[in-house]
Length: 99
Image 1 (cartoon, rainbow, N blue to C red):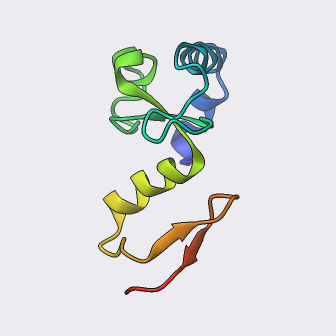
Image 2 (image 1 turned 180 degrees about the horizontal axis):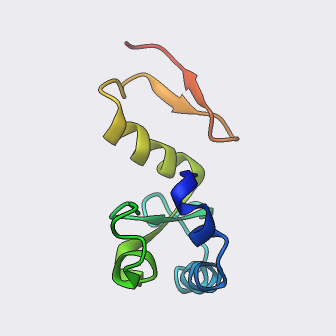
């Protein structure tokens, strides 16, 4: 978690929104239909937009993901090497071959 977002993620508003969204999606990952774990912001929170509830608390900017799908989201956007990467049950990267 980014330091600038720590206070937001500990807020009552976020916890209520997160729990509500989790229930709205029936606890299922929106990409693989496995058990969801992380309510992900599609448009990432930045210091410039973190006071905008249309970004931080709007269902239209949220997506429920399992640990693996969340890790893929961040590693695909932030890495040029995706092929050959997998994640263990803790969501940690493991090398399986490829590049």
